[in-house]
Image (cartoon, rainbow, N blue to C red):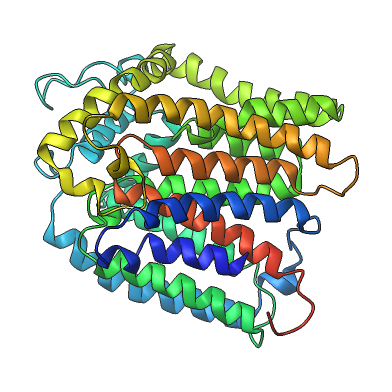
Amino acid sequence: MLLLAGVQAWLCTYALWLPWSFWKPILFLLNGCMLAVLLIKQPVLELALDTKTLFRPWKWVLVLGGTIYSYQLARIILDATPVAIEHADMLPIIQVMGRRFLNGQWHQVYAPIAEIWSGIQPIYLPAMWLPFTLADLLHFDPRWVTVGGVWIAVMAIVWQLKYLRSIGVWLVLGILSMVLWWLHTETRNNLFRLTEEGVVVAYHVLLVYAIVMRKPIVLGLALGTCLLSRYVLVTAIPAVLLWWIWHKEWRLLVRTAAAVLICCLLTIVCFGLTPFVQMLHIPGTYVEHAARVWQEHPEFFQYTAGMAELFGPNKIVVQHQLLLIMGFGLPLVFAGWMLWHKRRHCVNNAELAIATLALSVFYALIDVPYLYLYYTPVFWYLAIAVLALRQVKSDSL
């Protein structure tokens, strides 16, 4: 599993320097599917919450040294490119939404923004833009929230490692170092320079751990933040519901659903129905947006791990339909196969396996495969691999 996670990280980093080939996006999808299948064969994953594991001195030395060095490198990136709509409009829109919120204009948060593109309609869900209000409150560059989100994910992964002498642990640290060096030094991934995606990375790593914990309230809140930021995992919900209903996991289902519902109700109370209305309308604009990006920036479709280049600009609709069909269909088929498989064999980590498959299919077939989006699945796979590594008794792989 660690090998698969490492390959996924390589496909989203230095493999992109190789000439584009159809095998790269296909390998990305197949690796994600293999990881999902291996998960059900793996012993039940467990989360280490004891202070002895979490607070080993070497972990704090690594994290502290890494964050200091990250600050120096990230500051160069941020200083070279100001936050401006000429570069990318995501963060300027999020800033306006956050300032309206801080000014008490809660029901105006989703009103059109006249000063950006002559009245752009904000579409970001609350869990995406709310963390960036810290930047306004404390008067710092909002992109440090993105950097902080990535480091929350890194710390969550490092804290689950066992012994420094383990070969597996050194491999994890090597993969993390490769990804972090890429994010800080490669100029085209744009994760820190232009985007808000760091909070999404953090949410999804924490969701991995919430799924493993199987605490309904924690799981519901973690899932709620993911769905109210970037709703990738909505395609996994029908399959997980099928699994829980079949196994009569009523307590887990009801309490998790209640926690998610509370997150949604709080959003409605604070901001009205507009966020959800916008969310329902967004998928209908993806095809048009993809066509525009194909015209203006076709290079985005090759410098990525996504499969959009295989379809080309003339089959965007086919790609989008395949995303919907496979996005919802494959997790349901996988859940049905696991139910059949369980009659003769043990099936573990079912919910996490379903979510991993849904995540892999979504990012493989996403309409516009911006590279910065792919570091969410990269950290997701690493978080799973680290938990699996904890079950290895020896110091070797």
